[in-house]
Image (cartoon, rainbow, N blue to C red):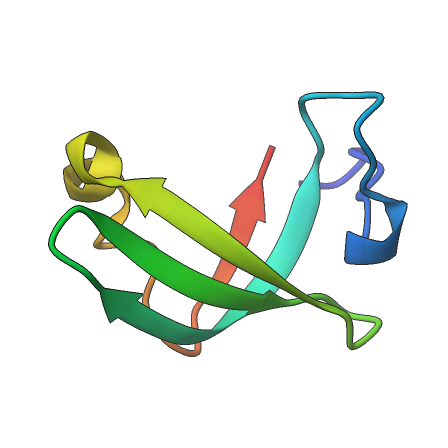
Length: 72
């Protein structure tokens, strides 16, 4: 990840669709049709993330509580 400028939760806005982020997963829960998570960035800001049902199999091994994840 060296060389990739990372964004923080407070940087996010509706002008862009894609952001490079690093965050810790602090909470994960599943519903019948999606997986939800709370992410915490290095500045202490939190954001709620949602993974739709058809994508859960792609992310369930990575998005686990206390894991650090990169979204690039």
